[in-house]
Amino acid sequence: DTAGPETLRFGIEHSRNQMTARLAQDLGMPIITEYAKRFGIYDDLLPVLSMSLGAGETTLLRMATGYSMLANGGKEVTATLIDRIQDRYGHTIWRHDERQCMGCMADRWANQPEPQLVDSRRQVIDPLTAYQMTHIMEGVVQRGTGKVLSALNRPIAGKTGTTNEEKDVWFMGYTPTMVVGVYIGYDIPKPLGKGNTGGAIAAPIFGEFVKDALGDTPPAPFRVPPGIKFVRVDLKTGLRASADDPNTIMEAFKPDEEPDDAYSMIGVNGMTADASSSMAPPVNERVARPAPPISRPDSGSLTPNGLW
Image (cartoon, rainbow, N blue to C red; front, side, top):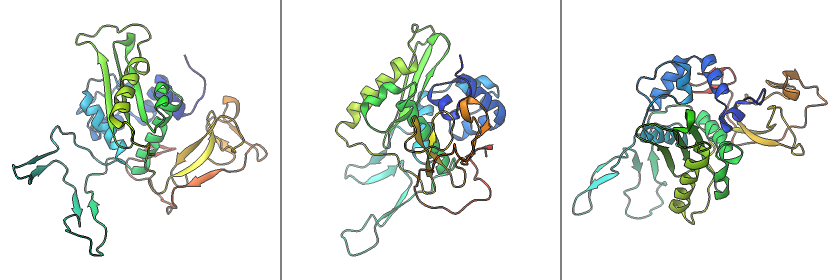
């Protein structure tokens, strides 16, 4: 069951396993294994293609921790059940968060610089790559298998999951302030029933929890890291598009990686083709903040040539 040539965004939004497996095959399973370990999802992932689809066993806490790193701009996150320990006088004697706040101990304002939170956590992946993944997974909620959550009317990124015969289903998702994982399945695996997919039964549970947890908190957008450029493209082909074209989105690109006016990996009518100057619409773009060109991608970067 394929829809023909599509973008990687489409494959993730609509859970096209064939596209994911082909991407893993092109990149090579050793690099998939490396990133699974980096995100703390697996310690030793078996390097076979089915593992790229989530066939390996892990825990909900590990999955939520991995997604937390995307939500935190690619910074390493360590899960904990204890935030801090205080004595009877309210003095903190242990705190899980090891970040130091410079200037937070001042008793009063005396024209000193604003307090700064020094984040020394390890950078697991490039922050621009982390945001691109977040932006793609927002599409899962806006157009894909998690569209049931679009009714919440707040920024949500996430991914549904369903194993064969609907024996296990899940939804891993996050807002700018919260990461939530929902898993449904029996201790001894057996089918949950035809049609009971991650998008059908796990995502709604996520939605109910987030609705209650956030309450009347005003929706806030995901933070866009400096250097991300938004370019309007055709949702089907990835070609640049104008605001007047139907079925377009603002896609997030790294500096100098936006699509050329006259070329698309898919092209016109699902075929690889050049687009003549008459077909290339005026560029419609906005930039988060200028950034100098880079000659070589940073480690953890997702580029048109693969994952570095």
